[in-house]
Length: 384
Image (cartoon, rainbow, N blue to C red; front, side, top):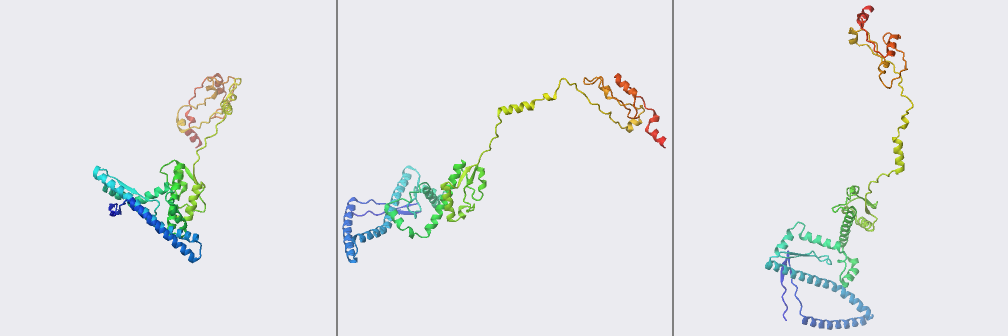
């Protein structure tokens, strides 16, 4: 049977070989030839062990390890070709669907077990063009999609076939220096994601962002940061060292560093009812200020001193005696009938019995007119 020629289908920016299924009869002949080859290899290993004077088991075990390690790369290449062929067939189906039914689509895939895989873009022509021109799409979008898948399913890229896992374990000490940079980037990315999730969970704010340089400003979300290692400065993880980022990541995962909600205001303690009632009764009791048996008394006040002004001195009215307080108190219900006060004339500084008699009788005295001889200018003329 003549082998089928490989077809090339342009997907994205480059074309990949199309997967071609094998004939079962051809596979049976292949297994027969493989068995013959393995028998010959076993005979060669036995002859080699006899020449080296070593046990056959030791030589066969060493040859098996070397064979598996050398076959790992070949197995990985075969797997990569198989995955690409399946994706290309799927892309061809989607492109045919766009031509026949007018359904536009694009296919984006990433291989989490292959570090060198940069993603696969397939689908219809318009679908692929849309993804390449989309903001945040293209190669950057494929890398972001791969990182997102690894965060949500971190065990996928570490798992795989037994031979691949054994090869990674035996060759871990011979990894290039680029693996350390990838590890530092993974730690930093994991730290960003862990802190962001913890902050959103504690604050309940979906778009909450960590304040790396000013953690005290987290009070806007109603939370505070506790447990931050004191030996690590409050800087962005991009400026910190790898061991510092690793220490922070471990602290947030173990709960040593965490976000706590700020305490709410404590309400004032309620006053007991009995105490409050007693205080209210005491504060509202004014019985001590009222005594029905004691009549109100008014202490006498001295008569006001009225200085003569120029307007009064120039008037032709005679000197007017001041009105006593007792005369105005006669009509007041609080006035006392038996009170007597000495009344002095403020102008003569002598006792005026006439005014006192008038006050006792309750009558008002009509002020007399002041003669002109008592005017201030008259006094001035006398002094001159």
